[in-house]
Amino acid sequence: MNKLLLIDDEADVQYSFRRIFDSPDLELHTASSGEEGLRKIPEVRPDLVITDIRMAGINGLETLRRIRQLDPKLPVILMTAYGTTQMAIEAMKLGAYDYLLKPFDVPKLKQLVADALKAARDMRQTVALGPQLEPQDYDLGVIGRSEAMQNVFKLIGQVAPSDATVLVTGESGTGKELVARALYHNSKRAQQPFVAINCAAIPENLLESELFGHEKGAFTGASQQRIGKFEQCNGGTLFLDEIGDMSPTTQTKILRVLQSGTFERVGGNVAIRVDVRLIAATNKPLEEAVASRQFREDLFYRLNVVRIQMPPLRERRDDVPLLVDYFLRKTAGPGGTPKVVAPAVLAALGAYHWPGNVRELENVIRRATVVAKGPAILVNDLPPEVTASVRQTAASAPPVGTPTTPAGPAVAARPDALSIPDLAHMLFRFARADTKLRVLPAVERELIIQALRESTGNQVQAARLLGITRATLRKRVDKFGIRRELNVA
Ligand SMILES: Nc1ncnc2c1ncn2[C@@H]1O[C@H](COP(=O)(O)OP(=O)(O)OP(=O)(O)O)[C@@H](O)[C@H]1O
Ligand SMILES: [Mg+2]
Image (cartoon, rainbow, N blue to C red; front, side, top):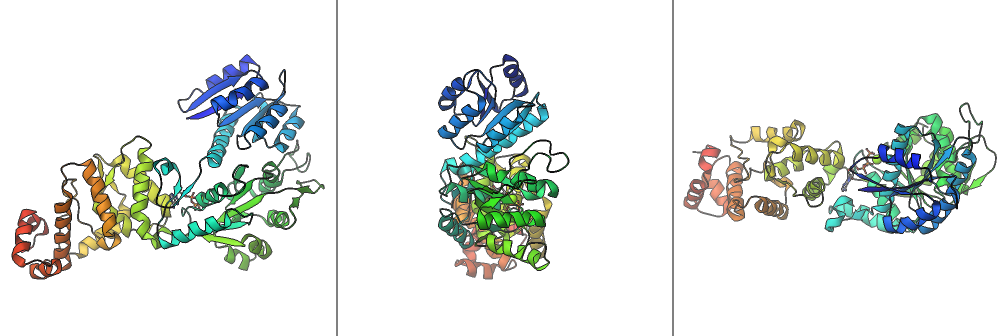
């Protein structure tokens, strides 16, 4: 539940906010003066404050200044009537999130509120690292116990406290943004603002002014002065996402900030000094962009002081069961009962090559949770591209029935993708959801089926693999009803 505190002395404005933000996931609180607003902040603990500038008593600017002292991370949006924008600009210099012109455009207001709430969440929700997460971390964590991820965690721990520029690289969906936030939360600047900007989402000609601001009249359409992100998050951390998509002029300016800590607003000639820690990310191979002269080599070296390379998911498949477990819980939400997955599902997920990495895995789990009819996710609940590789393996194996009912866990088509502890973990969760499942016989049955498969149905060989006599194997095969399913002689 997000909480918004509106500070405005006009009843009309309070009324329209009530109508605009009449939504179950937003709680609106109001105050009629700056003083009242400041009193309410510790008690309401809002995620966002929107305040008018002109009010009786202390004005919006003074209110903002005092909020900054109380809580530097609480985003504040100022509202102003056209003509007093100079004040709004002062407000941006004081660290306001943004400002809004009255009368306000409702879709714009809603978008601004949504963006500010996201920024507030990014700053507040700390990103936990590693596999031993507490239940409250199921909201936000960087999961991984593979060696590749352990190295990432170590590097985060080493570089986060310093002010060093960090470059996070890796394929799409590997968790670069998550890592950027983990760096921020573990830095000395954790109590200062964190501002994220996606360079690829902003048209090239606007990006420079978004980052550095502009002076009035700097270009057609620049009717007012504007404060850029570098100035706005002075003292804090700026996350430049998709940095590979930046024009040469912007690259030059970024290089200068990194070298001298100064820049000029677009169309301005006063050097402005800032203290900002930069974290950059890209999924483009920057070395290639440097080679083809699309990216400045000197900037590349400045950014590349510390490099965190995110491994693709297919190179850390041993993390799949852990991630699956995490996303099942995350999808269920606090208090919800997470679904469980059949071992065959886990095997299929472990065998897939994940071109979209962790993001794709998260989407697959979300979708399967919705599609699954019972407490368990079955192979048929997975998208076809994920199961295709497993079907191929199954087609080349001896004809087997793949039981996928919760009472008899499915055959793991690629058992090499699962460690025994992971299989056990999943089966125990399975057993919790389905009290009919008896774990030991289920494991025994799996092993027998697997042994028969690996010996292409030859019972003598299978018995040898299992370390039992052929007679015992026969009995077990009968007991578990495997003969029918495996169709072996
Ligand atoms: N190690 C991880 N543990 C848990 N969740 C993860 C992990 N890595 C990524 N995610 C989740 O996957 C999704 C994508 O992650 P993120 O946005 O950080 O990727 P990205 O590398 O920035 O991708 P892109 O290059 O496409 O922007 C997010 O929902 C994130 O929470
Ligand atoms: Mg990203």
